[in-house]
Image (cartoon, rainbow, N blue to C red; front, side, top):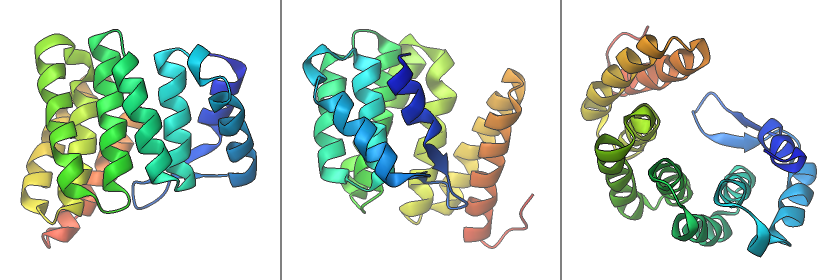
Length: 178
């Protein structure tokens, strides 16, 4: 990962609502603009990361274009899964749930078939989508499965992220949260 890509990552946080946001919007905007100025030379992961930066900045239409290009350029199943998930997010965040759903489903199917190590990532984002789509019972099912996967992986940050999403889903159905 380039220095710029690392800086973009560092300027994006996840809020209590489970969505990405820019911690320093102007700095992130400058970095993303600089990266996109050389878009034709960016690798698929670099282009995808710039698209994620645009999501965090709330520039959803532009993020959708950049992430669609990242998806077109993705040269491995894992990179395709990541681009599909983030493209789904770029539609979901501004309310494009109907456009997001097939992207998440494609990411899940691809992860199951070709890169099972990315399945937890695709399912996590799909679970958040289900909350937004007012299907919290299904979200609880999906996120419960993700939590088990992530506990097996042993990454405390991933576990915590899923626990937060699962709590939101449970709250949406009126269950006690963890």
